[in-house]
Amino acid sequence: MPPTPAFLAAARKPIELLQRAADMWVTRESPLKGEIVKTLLIELRVADGKLSPTYRSPFHLLAKGVESGKWWS
Figure: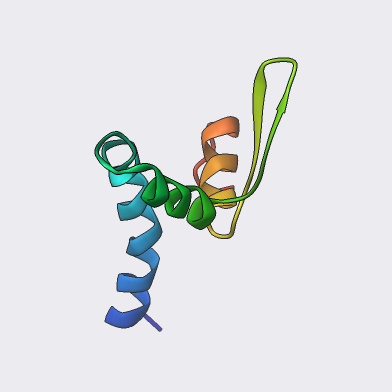
């Protein structure tokens, strides 16, 4: 059974957000930047000068694909 238009639209939203996130970060005021972080991340740790993000679903799947180079993972 092929996916419904509603399913495809919902699946596209996280990808569209990630495509706009960098521009949104640069152009938004600080309180709105916090909303971007809250949308994408569960937690963000800093240790030894390195950021260690824990992404919310479904962003964790996209991050895993970037790290592994396997977009289907």
